[in-house]
Image (cartoon, rainbow, N blue to C red; front, side, top):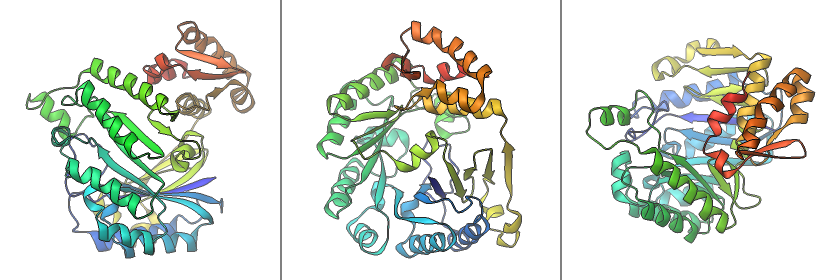
Length: 375
């Protein structure tokens, strides 16, 4: 399985916590679309005609695209790549973009069949802290309208660990999610990334900082409540009903190949990783697109092993010692088994038939455990 990711960098305003490449202006909209279409052609051989089963519009705010722009991108994609008839096409959307007219147009005139709606919270004080452009009422309305227009394959994002979000409010956010009976939830801990407005505001004392203990409590509540409702915790930050795992994100976690198109977009072909320039002006210089400004890294065996350990350990599929032996060799599997045993003894990891999985306790330390297993 292969995938295509489109990075649409436009935003109405920059969220305080966001460290993804985006521009709060539509100044270059038309020339950007032209450059994106040209890059699709430029990347046509990257996937070696592999069957594309997932297309993902991320950003930025892809829901700012018009129906015609989405269709132009999808048409060029089908002309250029080997796209499956039943391809999953996900569009990330902000609640304030999903009005009646927009949803009707998307449903009737495009092939988009999955929405990822950036709700983040159903409380206005949390949204204000995050500098989100939408309101709590718009968050609720966007989900209701999407369901009314026949979009059943929906996921929403919720953020926990927001200083304004009490434990009770966090439970209410989850109860609101459950009330819609949606098939998928992505939920992330608020983190303070360098060079973000959030980092600057906290350092200047203008807004409250993050409480790690609060984030841990919220994560434990998240696991407890989603499990009670029968959702499968198939990746650290992702929960789904059976049959509704994200095909695109699963592709990343299972080591599949994908091409990233647009400024800052990443690509992976099994042996190397490359990423486009994070600069709109450079990206839209279409006459230079044949020599697209991108950095490339050929991954060593150690790096490929580290990536496998890091991604697989985060999932419900687990980290397979037999896979490590077959792909990387005896030295790697011996080192892996020696290192992971400590975490098994600490009850942060358990194993079944040679596959190793994080316990709920271990999920709190996922990054540290993976790092301890790296070569």
